[in-house]
Image 1 (tube, one colour):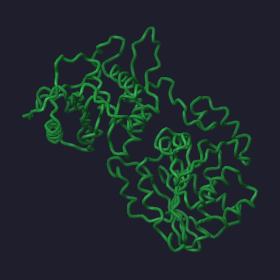
Image 2: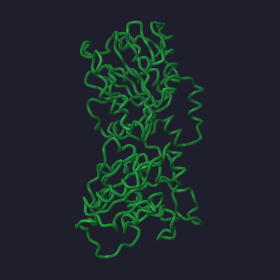
Image 3: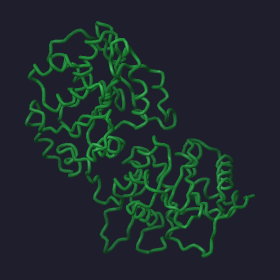
Image 4: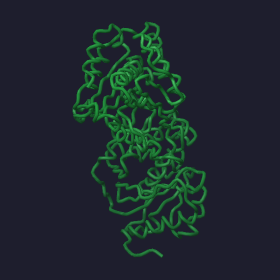
Amino acid sequence: MLTDGLQQREEQQRVNYKQLLAYRHLADPRIRYVVYGGAAGGGKSWLGCDWLMRCCWAFPKTRWFVGRNNIKDSRESVLVTFGKVADSYGFTDYRITDDGIKFTNGSEIVLLDLTFYPQKDPMFERLGSKEFTGGWIEEAGEVHYMAYEVLKSRIGRHLNEEYGLEAKMLITCNPKKNWLYKHFYKPHIDGTLPKDCAFVQALVYDNPFITPDYIRTLESIGVKSIRLRLLLGKWEYESNANQLADYDAILDCFTNERQTGDGVRRISADLAMKGRDRFVAFNWTGMAAKLAIDKPYSTGKEIETDLRNESRRHGVRRSNIIADSDGLGQYLDSYLEGVKTFHGGAPAPDNTYFNLKSQCAFKLAEVINAGLLCIDCPEELQSTIAEELEACLVARDVDADTSKKRIIDKREMKAVLGRSPDYFDPLMMRMYYEIVPQPKGMRVHVGRLS
């Protein structure tokens, strides 16, 4: 598709060999998705702007996109770099518009806002009616997995057949333990990357056009995990020395064999009404968790009805239903007599832990690291849940000889995630049954519940 453009680019001097490798993948009709980057200073933005500029000019009236976590970043970063790329070639046949970039031959590059709005547009339906020839996701580590999934269906939709163009998506990023790690980096390392995907790791040292001062800046970063990511492109970085669960073990939770354990059916729920997080509940068999309820808004009556119906459907006895004690939870037992309410701040059964929540969190990490937890949920939620488990299963940096073991508090979790964790709490609460002695002889209840 871009053979001529590739030849022209090789004749230019402003190029690095990793960018040429990415261009060859973009020109390969067998490859649909190209991930480029993995560190700072590797020429990611230059590659994206150069590629889209050439595509737009070579194929009149085509339509391409650049998507970032927000429009403001696109205008302050992508448009500036595009101007530099165009200037380097003396190219002037374009103009900047409110929506992006228009070319005099009728082609355009549309700037997309890929901000995740969990309450207003969790499925990125705003992108569903758009049609593009191809496009580029910039700083993809900041972009939600669902945006990528929806955009996959929107490329190859505008003049591709007329020009004989394959649908192509360029994805540029720094190392991030999210969907990029799971779907691209790890399969690349394992040799299992799908044939329609390509991964190119580009470091600052691969770019002969970067300034020595920029390299010195990266080399002087004091925080080890950040320096490893941005300078050396380490995807297996430890974001926190107090991390309790291994990230690969977290990802394995979505592919582990079902662990039925004692075979007892249970439900764990994080209750939330309007204006407060989500109403989330998991249905459990042993250590196999199935996401059963996930709603952004529920009334008290709806929560009661949903939990009652879920317990009846799966024969879960009341004592095997556990819900948080905040808000509605403290009154839940009045409606569903016999359910357990979880008081995270209560004393832990093991007095070496700060509180009940901390002991349950440490137990959850232990179960994850042992490969025992199996999570059944929609694929688009896997990255979100994995992100929460990594961000929340973090111990406080304490002196083990003088302080009790504890995890970071909810405020710190929100600061790391940029939102409240919705799925961590019900997964953590299930561990109550593992750390609190249960009456012997308990069996699965199969009768109807009133």
